[in-house]
Image 1: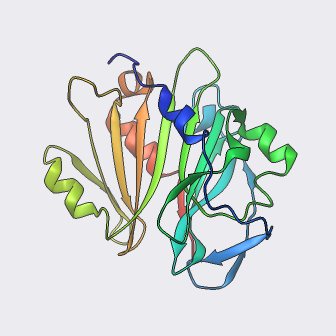
Image 2: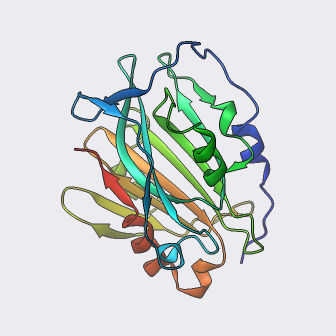
Image 3: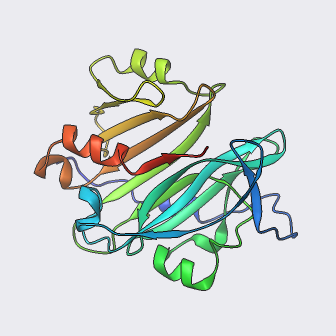
Length: 225
């Protein structure tokens, strides 16, 4: 397993917040353009579905990005309530900002505090870190086609593998390099304009293998109608 040398990313994600409106809203636009309630749903799990050791129950968290000035949700991802959760969003100027309310607490605690239920943002970035000794870390990021596409990922990482459906194809690979800490990266095409990437770092890459791990992560994602 590669050395764990980059933990500061989580600190960066929760350190700053820029251009945040003081106006609170309880919903944002869904992929269909209709107003979508920010709902966090509990789901049953067996060992957190082969992705999150010691993760407890899973909670569906919406992710998306700001499109033409509107916070738009494109997918929901099952995430573990026992992991530390930090989130960021993209503002109307295309700048990435931390939602400072989410930094450094478990997803379960944030749900109980109502932080997620009244969020005015479609989160474009999420960092999950296990609070147990398995040291699992996952980084979720949403990109528009102007910045990254599934084809560009394939061209840059030709030794990967394809999975998924025709509607939502995905591609995963093992990154390499002297300072790389991730064990596997999955790129998931939400639609023709939106790409989701998940960087995984943890013991399951060796325990169950990246082929099974990639499929397990893929199955956690639900595309918005």
